Image (cartoon, rainbow, N blue to C red; front, side, top):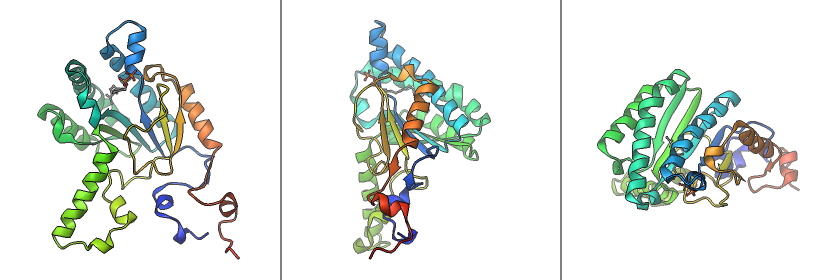
Length: 263
Ligand code: FPP
């Protein structure tokens, strides 16, 4: 099948067929911080602190493997509903991480970017986020996307609102709206779609993460809790991904002989 006839899902993704490569874009749900702490009879916040250390393990791995984009689900739209003290502790942790880590990330060529409802954070955190993005904007070694106050439904609703505004302003006609146009307003539309999704902590769900972007992403789950993450586990996920055939709704035969016209 000719490239011109690829579906929007294919066009969004970075590769077709056998995935015997390193993923270009890795998306991660970092689950299990609370349980990790509870098993040690420690407060949940201790688990989040250990989780922040595991973020470094993941970033180091991506840099070493040449993964281009790492998107981490740090705080969901729904996480605002957690007990006040846990939300407060997480905000402190984010602020501390932004203060501590950004210079080092910058030095290592990492571009930092945030997606989500930024307005819900305090002015101090928003200022830090803006500053981190500005400081690292010129870096290209690894694109580190932090999804914070993020929800996949929020993302799609926001895109719809932006398009509705364009229609109201006379810049767009409703009949021009298709997957391509809507997809162009979803966050991260300038980056390849995630090739591989990893969730730690044993749950097997997407939890309102990148709902649009994950359409053809390969999913990988582990019972390991996020603070226990190590390079060997990440390598296992990559090895598994490498052995999979990505068909994007086509048949295996079509992928094996992409230029043959069907009879
Ligand atoms: C889910 O575990 C984790 C979170 C809601 C927070 C993630 C935050 C970090 C890993 C720390 C800092 C991150 C950055 C980017 C600086 P959970 O609390 O739901 O665990 P549980 O399922 O065991 O309760």
